[in-house]
Image (cartoon, rainbow, N blue to C red; front, side, top):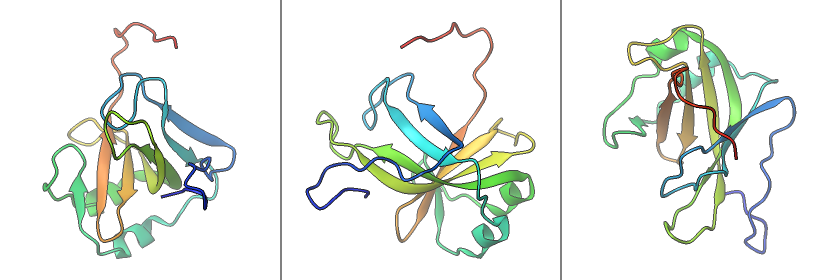
Length: 142
């Protein structure tokens, strides 16, 4: 986690330009209105290195379901360094920034994902897919 010596959460270590993900609907890890991730838009990483990492990758939405990143690599337009905010103790807001990376795709996959966050949990990784929000959804204002 990205905490200082006193245990306080450090600000994300991602420079500008960057993209941020704001949690619109809260969940047990990040409440509504808080940042859920920050990703760099410069200094892209080599997609080939992603494939050299042989740690298992699970689906964030279906723990235990394995994911093959090779098909995603072929349509990845950007692989960028990121950090994601998690809260390990539901009900007690004490967030941590964890290492992650962001994949932005040049085309949707069969599930409609246009972007993914790959969380780095040490001995394994977990991928969380993002799909476009339908235009019929009313605007959200904090």
